[in-house]
Amino acid sequence: MIKGNGRPVYQGVAIGRIYVHTKARDVVNRKCTDIVKELERFEGARESARKELEALYDKTLNEIGEEQAGIIEVQSLFLDDLDYIEGIQDMIRQGSDAAFSVHEIGDAQASAFAALDDEYMKARATDIRDISDRLVRILTGADQGFRMDEPGIIVAEDLTPSETVALDKDKILAFVTRQGSSNSHTAILARVMNIPSLVLTDIDIDPSLNGRIIIVDGFAGNYYIDPDDATMKAMQDKKRSAGEYKASLESYRGRESVTRKGQKVSLFANIGSPDDIRYVIDGDAEGIGLLRSEFLYLGRDDFPTEDELFEAYRKVVEAMEGRKVVIRTLDIGADKKVDYFRLEPEENPALGYRGIRICLTQKDIFRTQLRAIYRASAYGRVAIMFPMIISLKEVEDIKTFCTEVVGELEAEGVRTSPVELGIMIETPAAALTSDILAQHVDFFSVGTNDLTQYTLAIDRQNEKLDGFYDAHHPALMRFLAMIAENAHKAGIWAGICGELAGDLSLTDEFLKMGYDELSVAPSRILELRKNVIESEV
Ligand code: PEP
Ligand code: MG
Image (cartoon, rainbow, N blue to C red; front, side, top):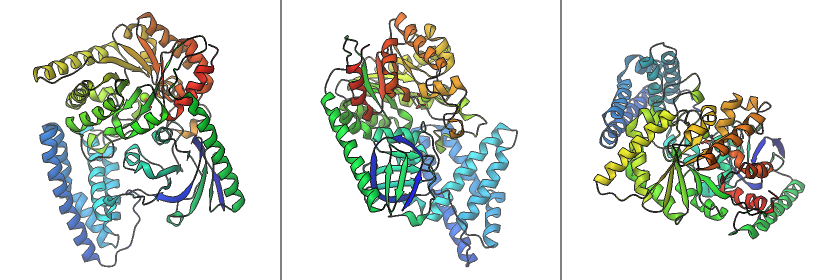
């Protein structure tokens, strides 16, 4: 038996077989013996990549516009770039296999571009990485992707948001990763899916782990590979009592979330995709307080169309049958990267080009989303929320743009319903000017994950700083009190949708501050409702 540990991100016990998740990027150098054949294989991959890019160019031109299509065109030029192509061919001639050669030369040239001063040249680093990834994927057949035939437990170095969206959620019993953090998106996903998971583990990732039995104890933060009988028995008991506790919460299903003294708070759910609706229903959420739109953009090769977005939003809105759905516009950037957005490498991505900053500068992307959301509004009760706000000017620009989009739809005879417009308060700038902002929006939702990161100057992704990270820091508590007060003074409602909303030790505090809504992972709702109903506040 191998025993190890890590940081638990969701409590529970899972027992199953291991699926090792490796990345297309983890290419290893398999020496090639037939150099001529390997050069031919590379030529074949170049041709396939060219065809893929041509198709992508046409699709982008039709569905998005010339500017984005131009980017695809630039990328295809690298397939004829002598430095790049000859560099790869030389490496193959020296005995490396094609995928490894593409990976190495691609990485070296991308780093060289990234180090240049010229902004245009810097941006080419992403192009080279992207084209290299495409070639590696074709050469290694990695596009067949990671598959799970049976339910099991995923063991990985780390999973990017794009990788998690590609997974078959029905089959995942738990995640065990070497990297990650309790606030990372894999952790957030694990909580949405109610699966016990460990990040920052000491597990040795090796293909020989595939198919072996592992137990994940999300209470203690331990894992056991090839468990002995005594451990198996103890863990099965623990799993059973966790199940019993969960069953005891069922008595809170369908009840109103109101304290003994009559204070009411709405308990909403955070989700990333229409597939998560089943967790929302199962968790008994009273609405959706945060639909993270960026998940609709992850795990694809190009932008979703307006119709695709509309269908996704409509599905959620209809499933909620008149209960409120707060849709957050795209918050891409920082830790959520999508290749086709062509985001340049940045020194400080969390302080960089992300969220509303992208939407307000790339209006075609923003317009497509807003049109889709407003179209979906006709099918239920929709609110739109904008991330990473720092100023009134942004709010004014957004509102003007929304009015324009609604006008367009009306002129086309498209049906819409009234939509509340709110903002996330997740920067200190927004928190400190919340009295002003409150006069211009319909609601606030506090993003404590980012508000904590920016208030404490602690990167939420950096596990080395966990010892300094204080989710209950007085500065944050002051901000939270101030935000609710300013919202109420202006007559608007305020909620919290960051992870802190589900921190049961703070429920009383949030009630005292007067928060009207708490939006948490769907699996947290019943326990949170128990806390509210039993609260003395
Ligand atoms: C937050 O920052 O608290 C939040 C809810 O948004 P995200 O975690 O998606 O950045
Ligand atoms: Mg945020």
